[in-house]
Length: 277
Length: 277
Image (tube, rainbow over all chains, first blue to last red; front, side):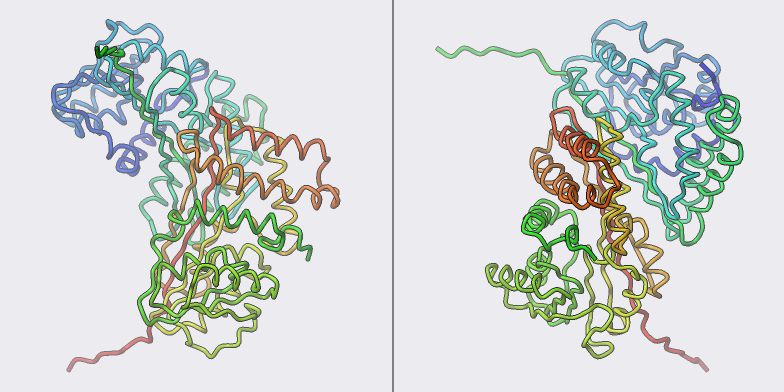
């Protein structure tokens, strides 16, 4: 698995995720807050881009953040320390071999993780065993098939397709956002509710033009340039034209649209059979 | 211009628009209400699918609804009468040759109209002359490039592309939603604000599965079958597979996404130069 486009592994990617968390934080996270005393598992924390927000929104909760990458965890810890967080514990662990007892957590939080897994459904099923009955799972994923823009550009769509194809070859799915609902239902969660979080950007919102269109989405696509060209799935000239066309959507008359999907599901409590005589 | 896919001209299309207005009405219209006594122009009312909502949300306003088609107007009048509306006057008129004095209206409302025009910018400029300074224009348009779904299907995307291509050949633009912002700005409106109205449908929302995925969007695509095949832009087998794939997204594990764009702009008041001495 190439590390070139696994989010957060490269310095520029890391900076991009930080930008993303900075501008998208309200849109994605403002409605997630856990009660004091509850035990939360953040599965796949990466470089901790979401951990700081998660911990600040739930200051009384105890958060355990895991990731499979020691390098990412090191950065996540540094970021957590710099933010002065005291309610987060980091552990290195594989999402498919988690070192926790069943029903250890009140809630599970999974953000930008399923997109990288070849077996996202199995991951959710595994996480469900760690939940106490009545607990919730929260899943947030993007969907690169939700990106469209003005001016439209075949080259830009082709550059995005390269990222999708590379992620597919690495076993992931960059268009998984639209599948959050069926995944949560198929994993056996109850009361599943999914809400789209659409990022609509025009020049009346200069912070999003810069923070999202340029520094998050287009920078991410630009970041797969070498991998895409080396793998032979695109000509350099076409890819570069696509990236230019994406930057073009950040000009005064441009528009850029992208949608994240946030789903919440419950682990059912055991049925209580009441007999009335 | 073929009438086969101009919304509202055919009985089935008319029923579809009614379904659409029934399920989408809150999403699209709930934040549009005009003050008592104000004069409103609804430009391009078609069969009156939006007129009833518009008139009910602004019971004290005087609404003038125009359309270029006498047939559509007849149906719009019948619908308005059946709904007991007393604050709507209908007139047959071309949006590019409107029979009104400049600055005759306090507000202008344009819904699902620009998508059919080859000169949408000129239409907005023409409508602006009819507005009093300080008045607003409200524009609502869909964007077929915003449609994506699970399970994904190349055939379904191809069937949608047929509708887009037919509308393009008729001089329209089925992907105009994303351009509402630059169009309003280019037409010279001030304080332009555009908000996306995303329809996200999964099986937790059976009303939308039936009312939107099946009876609005897929029925609309299905409605261009003959035109698409006759024009030679698609093989019947592929088109039919695409329609089946769209209906497939309405099953229990399916997801369907589509976005409308609603924009509001102001006609500037003349500058008042204040000199302080």
